Image (cartoon, rainbow, N blue to C red; front, top):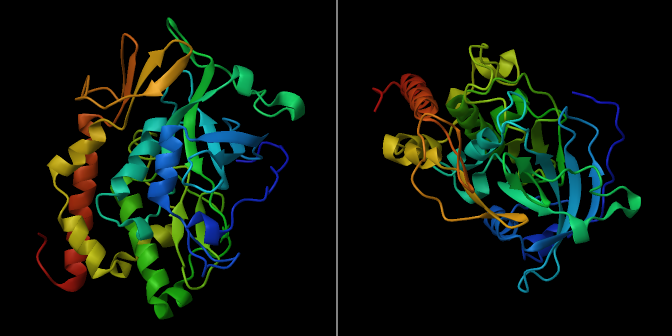
Length: 336
């Protein structure tokens, strides 16, 4: 949704050859070392060098350029999207736990080189001395405050900002018919959107395709409108054409991995992030058992926990059963 804001700058970032430690990669090649990026972001091993509010989104998310401070990272820079958490943590159009769930759920059936959601974490960005408001940078961020919790940091979702991607002609059926790699990436994306019950009629801003013809990765970004976020709203997966077909595009490898998912594995989604208020900051801490399986946002004392509810996990399990049944019918085999 447009909000009449200027497009943020396209800051220079580390080239693919540096980001993926692969000198064979050219400037226009696609690379996404998701595990490394997730580790850097989770550990807070970065400083913000540039910041601007994006042109889209009711919640006024930010685009930020960050520089990695990990001594083994060779001074890498890339951009991220930062979306502050809503006051109640769970607005229908801004649900941090659902975005975390989409990122984590894909790990149950996709390898890193097949991910369809970019690295996504919950992080509290320190303000105060790190405020870069000479040019308005970070000046619009507000410290997180909930109940008796007062921290001099802004809590929100941090997601890797994909480079060398486009929102143009993401779904190309003629290409899918001739390009196996592209077709299988589309199948992986379809699997995820079915599992999370995507409820957004998304456009180019949310569905992206790598422009690298040798690595035709497809991605879903901003996955908050999923997992029942809009109640009984009919599921609309990207477009009517997208929602009607393409089960047969899933690779045998993906289908096999989907069959390996059971309730025990899905229960990992019951705790997606756990934070503790420590003085004027909020730190990620080791996850414990769900504090309340019937609530997605749980708080006790200075501990904050986000996860899927038992009912939402049951919904994912039912979507999985329906998906496997559809795959089995396509190949003429009984559902597992």
